[in-house]
Each structure stands twice: as structure tokens, then as C-alpha cells.
Image (cartoon, rainbow, N blue to C red):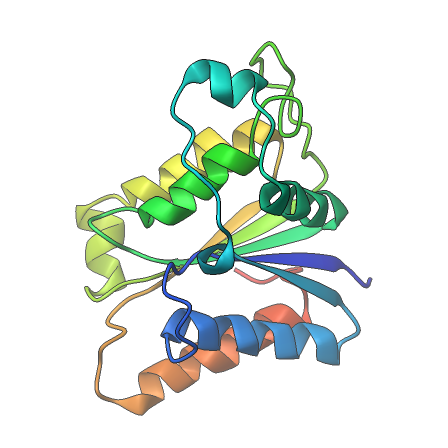
Length: 196
């Protein structure tokens, strides 16, 4: 089954040398090689202000770049969200993007009930970090990933949601990164169907 895939590239640095961008490229290559359609939302290139009030979040109009991102999310069957772990959570720019894009009327019903206007979409979250992934998963309980899963994606109806934690990204052994790039290509080839 061919799928429409939206990649939300959450690294705030647009430098193409970042490992998060290599992961995006590997996934995209795998997906396109198998006939899936891919569109990328590069958060680092979007110029949007932060949401500063409840009234603005509920009733304000999102900027044009966010409207464009929303149209890509609406088009997609599957979301791939990639970001580095910064200060124990997602970078502030990515959080600001979610606050702009996943507003009432777009992502859930206007009364704030568990409306799930994005139901029918699946997702994979990929988080890179300097520490070993097992430390983040078991000692820190992967708290920021769980918050994204439960409080944003699941709340809006997205599921199933799979998670890949990529630790020790500064490991000098190039085989470590190579294994993850190959795995991301495989995830893309299958558009995440059946992969964990």
C-alpha cells in the first residue's frame, strides 16, 4: 500500500550536516524507492511567532507558513517526527511549531474534548541524543517523548505511534550511525508498516 508521508524535521539548525537531517534523507530515500510520496516540513526554515495567549491559540489565525504545514499534515497518512533531545525535551522551536499547527479546529474539536481530527494517521517519533538511549528510556522514563505521544499526537487522534530513540550519536565509531541510517531507510521503504 502506497502512503503519503509528512516528515516534520524538528532540528532547529538548518545545517545539512546534522545527523537528524541524514536520518530524514535515509527515510525519504527508502520511502521514494518503494513508491511512497514524501513531503517535508522543515521547522528550522519556518518564520512563525510563538503563541502567547490562550485566546490567540484558540481564536487566532496561524501564519501562512503554518497553514502550509497544516495542509501537508492533512494530506499525510503517516507522520515522521525527527528531533534532537535538548535540555531533556524537544527543542523550543519544535514545541512552538506544535503550538501553532496543532490548534483547535485543525487538530481537535473546538471545545477541547478528545476529538481527534487527525485520526487515521500513524506516526513515528525519532529522537537523537548524546546519552545512551537506554539511560533516557529507563532512568529518565523518556518523559518528553511520552508527552508528545499522549498530550499532542494521541490527543489529536494519531495512532499507532512508534518511537525510535537513537542514543550516543557522538560515538566516534561510524558503524553506529551507519546502522541507524540503514534502519531509517528500511522504515521508509515500508512506510513504517510492521516496523518497531
